[in-house]
Image 1 (tube, rainbow, N blue to C red):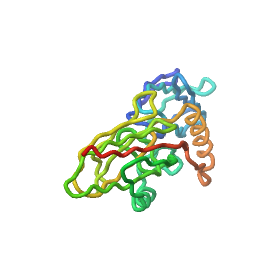
Image 2 (image 1 turned 30 degrees about the horizontal axis):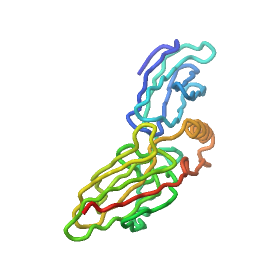
Image 3 (image 1 turned 90 degrees about the vertical axis):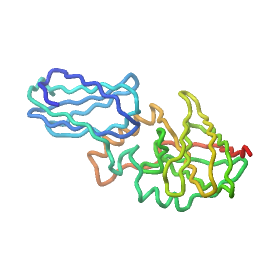
Image 4 (image 1 turned 90 degrees about the horizontal axis):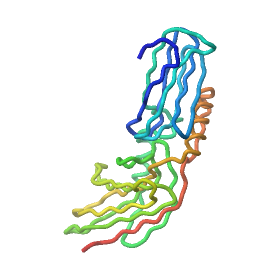
Length: 241
């Protein structure tokens, strides 16, 4: 996109919750701001710079490009998904995911308690997960059976069933404003992976994450790390046969 500085406003609705990088190349000093009704992420960095921000999928954001100190000139604005290790939310990273899948704990009928930590590059539920460290192995006896899975957590939660090869079979997530989810599925004999993931970041977490990401851009050799979400959950597994 090419334009002339004069408070150009662009609308951006990210297709999924992720960390995005907005890149500006300009002939004069430029300013870039990304904001919605809850948060503002600002950046002023001359003629060639990037702004990494974590945004929620499906929400509407405004992106403003302007000249710094009344500067005028041409610019190009581009946006891409951030897949770097400093991104709070990014696609699955095999170096993180493969060990999690390999040590998945067996889960049986009844109730299971645990604590989830979100993990950048961790196992992501395909119906809108952020990435987590929580995977279970479910074994179905010969003849198959229908199972009902319920989860309740201290965060909006998603459940995903994958076959032994890692292919997604079913995925369900909490309704808007809810912290529980239920899934019923008919399964053939074999082993399955059950992924438990968080689906949404609070506004406070997003503000802190974006502050850290901006700081990381000054200090790329020392990226911030740590879980964005950490909370307890309970899983109920019930056989319907």
